Image 1 (cartoon, rainbow, N blue to C red):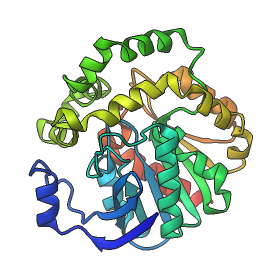
Image 2: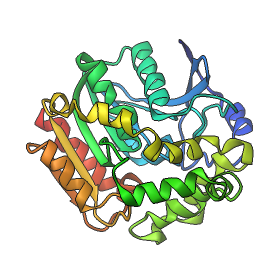
Image 3: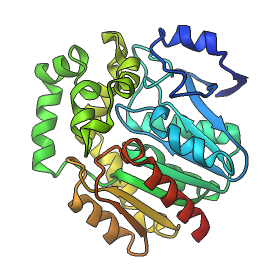
Length: 303
């Protein structure tokens, strides 16, 4: 895979984003990284020790904008959009499992030669980003986990019921035709919906405005249980991850990732620092960026 060193010109970016992109909310000049399956867009802001931000679904680097603005004064902040998300390409037939996203993420990290990394993961960013600490342990120094998972999911009866719907005609219709993930599930995941203003919501709807562009969130939904074996293989190596300094930042009003999931992390990482955010839901960096910024600064100071 090859790295494109030039940034994207704002006029070209506006054209690519079909003018839905709010340049005041997202005042960055993304760069491009070419992969065999398509080109990734990513932020590379600031200088200093690097922080790598890994989003889930149906999000993109926009989720990290306030955190990047605050920390890029002292750190190099790298935040990619997974293929099919955000400003990255949305090819029709690209491989879009978490393992595929993880491989492209690792290639980007190698191309940028990032070391001494603070790895920040959210949602599906867990199974996408955390393998980096297993396959390239020399590059990762610490972990920060926001409302995420890594363990096998196939044994969960509730998830299995959801999976049967997702894989059927109704699930395909909801994701591909009605844009269920950013239109309905995202706002339902907020602790306080008023924090998702129409202006901000448009930035999550924009990448999937066309039906042809909605393959990635649908593939991620299918992977929730469908890629359980892959998650299990990583979870078997959790003791390796536990050797790193771990910080857990947890939105307590998340309807999907609950106290049960948090306790599973704490059991695996008993020495982890825990920052609870009582008034935030699933998208902690969107709802309470100040809490995430403070948590990251604390993690960076602890070593």
